[in-house]
Image (cartoon, rainbow, N blue to C red):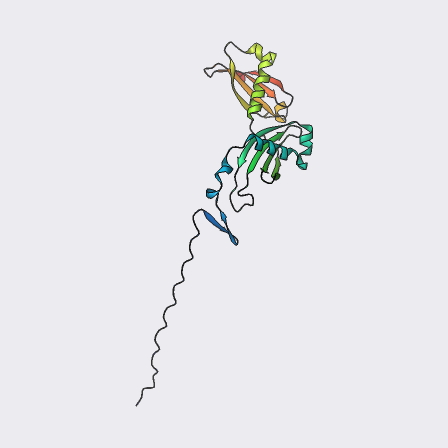
Length: 217
């Protein structure tokens, strides 16, 4: 008698393992439909210091921006920093020659932080805040020159006293003139490091507002 059981069907072959996708080349990053280069393979020239011509173009572009028309018209501002800036992909400005400018507007007591696209000749980023940026080298030199010609400072300087350092000074109380006005503290003393006198300079009106012995500072 024939068996009623059906013959077992052979097991199906396992599906072929999916092939792994090829890894993206090193130094590249996938972004949307295309690939954007990483900062590692960016043009090295983007990191070069700004030339005098580029600095002049950046400052002109900044002061011609309508949002800063009042600052440019009054002219009571100082450039604190002007340096090259490089951004990473996928930022739209990646690969562009950029310049970051930090300025302080004395007429409105505000700090300006801007990014200039030198390739397009436009201000690509502009930010206002009430912070006090560090002193620029020009401000430090100006503070020393103002303090050195002040009669109160000259009469109290001892033989051998020189300007040791210049620091940004911000008043701690609202009664202090430097609380709301950009100021610098010039420290005088001997070459061995012993301080003897501190002169506070108002960088808005270019005058010495305080002369204090170093031991009382």
